[in-house]
Length: 440
Image (cartoon, rainbow, N blue to C red; front, side, top):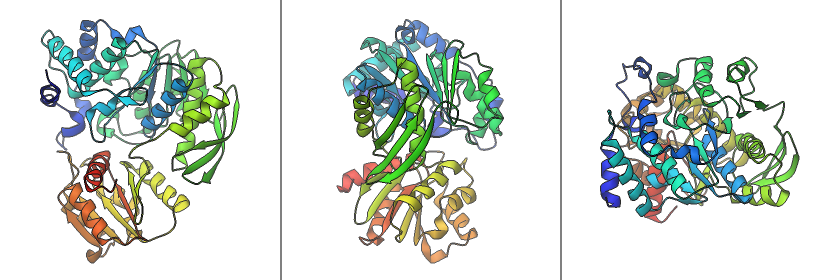
């Protein structure tokens, strides 16, 4: 298959990230299964067994921790592949070797392999199962030293759970994806704990003692807990990021520069260091961790993509993410008139999310439709904004992210801030639109 035909074939498969399920249905009502992905990797020769792995889950911060962990292990001299989701602009972003996403030709080739394998399966694969199989197979083909693999949703029944991670990382546990994972933090923790395999090392970023037993019961040989074994001792604001003092089970790291915005990124950095140490069996040298952290980028997560006006992209898609965005804006950016561009998916309560994102403080709100069948109608969001007390003359709607961004930029003066948020679908579309404009 050509790259175009391979992507067209991929898009023919059900993509729960995109289409979801009807709003009156519970995804947990259907018995979850790993049968399809297990059958697929068996046909592929069980590629995931040919290299060790670091497996990550959590409500927020998974991709940032995956990027940091990959950078640390790469800087330590290892050949490191990574699998993350979702992508912002191109599906290639999900499957990477070092800093480079898989090339078009290589992606087409491995998708062709999956397509042939699917002919021998009893059931049709999902979009995410195909990409998971493609990533695990490609990593074996290029003979990596290890793979850093991010869970899509949850853990126990996620397609990535055919991986037996030597190190399992749980960033945190908050309420999200309740239709998949259950309505309580305990039910969500139980699903996420499913990636912890007997004999592994668990890096537990969730420090709530009421949830700790859920993870300890999984049989990890070693457990490293935030606030007990690793932590952030200080995180000072610096130009373009933060300077951190971190402590892990084997070392103390002082004056570490991290070129990312948001206090939560310090917690992510501590978890990544603990994970890298656990895999390596020793602390990285100062040269290694300084170089690794300086190289880290986290697109779409408090990402500054323009100045005069400041344009900031953040994929905050739940209440915890929204709180982190507002905290970062208050702490790290000059107080200025702010135009907020927001699009939400339909499983999010618009009143809760819009309030959490701070639209009452915005000078203008542009509400848009994310490029997803799961998108909330912008008019519904506008109604919620009015319910919250935003004056009608401060609200406008757009049927596309590109139109919303264009409207925001047209109204902004150099001293303003334009913040695009609410969903990674919105952020990805905004990045692409800004690139076409030459603003990103």
